[in-house]
Length: 308
Ligand SMILES: C[S@@+](CC[C@H](N)C(=O)[O-])C[C@H]1O[C@@H](n2cnc3c(N)ncnc32)[C@H](O)[C@@H]1O
Ligand SMILES: COc1cc(-c2oc3cc(O)cc(O)c3c(=O)c2O)cc(OC)c1O
Image (tube, rainbow, N blue to C red; front, side, top):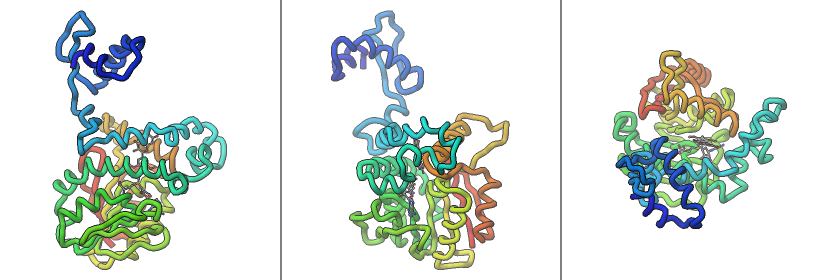
């Protein structure tokens, strides 16, 4: 689309037209648009979508717009301004200083934020679930049942239940997240607290969960998972989908920077952290698991299978 057409399509005041070129210039520089032709007349410049901007299109089923909208919401951005206060006192997180409640309790009391955050996690899960199952079919093959612990509104479990119709899938999350959600013949929703009791299954999935919690809490969650495994032998397993930080100096690349930013998010919003391989092994053995297998997938993420 040419700049002149873009300006005439946007719901802006005519006095703001000159600013659109400047906005497009930075978004082209950062890879959200590409520019077709070089011309001296700004209004004739033609912009095209890139892979990054296609991910933000309204009609795209893989759109991650909900993720971006949630992450730019003041509920999530304001806590960053409390970092220096947090460093000077004993409060558990900058989020708690800002909002007076810890993250998951805040979501339970603010239905709008609850929906925004759950929808953002679901859009991230929609983007990766097919690819993940395609690349790692063997991880789930032959499992009779699986509980997606803290599985949100069930996007990952829905894809799993369709790809593996013989597998009984349970989405387990806090009541305010799963109340009223409809399952299917091999998918059901259970509300509860993972620190209390987790439904029994042959395998347990933990996707983007342990990074929200400190080591002591993670060991508690993992021990609860171990208790809930129907097979305590080599056939039972917990499947963790998370980052494994790579802090080797020679691996300093873009994806390490993103991983370190995620670590900051976990510091500001909750009481968690991103972990390197040694820290993962410590957690796994402290919770009484005897073996593990780490498979890197999709750049940032790894599958960590752990066995009782
Ligand atoms: C970062 S989200 C991940 C959601 C989902 N696994 C995914 O990858 O899209 C963390 C989830 O943990 C859930 N959660 C937090 N505390 C919990 C608890 N005590 N028991 C069960 N679920 C909990 C939240 O409601 C939220 O859905
Ligand atoms: C609290 O648990 C999670 C948060 C996120 C998360 O949060 C933010 C917050 C923010 O102010 C800006 C951001 O860009 C983001 C994120 O990109 C982001 O991912 C993610 C989680 O798991 C993937 C959480 O568990």
